[in-house]
Picture 1 (tube, helix red, strand yellow):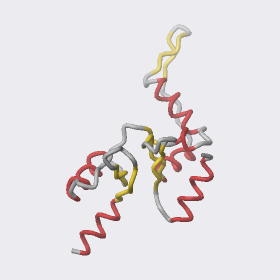
Picture 2: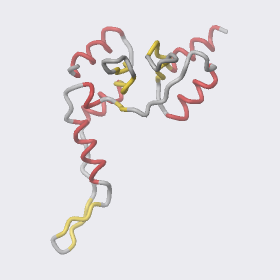
Picture 3: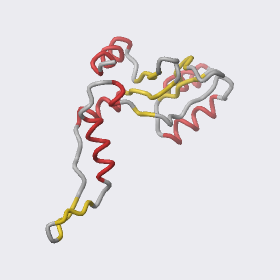
Length: 134
């Protein structure tokens, strides 16, 4: 799917992220506002030093290559956060979900059924609304 199409869906439905599934309906990633904003902000090349005409990277050039590919991406697949992604099941408690959101530093958790298919998304806002309701 083109990235622009995903951005349009996020904007139209006023949501901050979408699950990305393969042809079999299995979760393969998440595309979020953070991924899109990061993609638009660009990439900082890794720090390096030159010694005797050799370049020595002070950070991982492989990480830079991955970030560059993501920053230049034009499809959801190129920009999304890929597995492993934190997920929950309908049987897990709200406190487990809150702990996972905090621990993984994410704002949404895909809810998967027994077959591993996405049946919903639980967001930080959902938890706040549940807490406020009762």
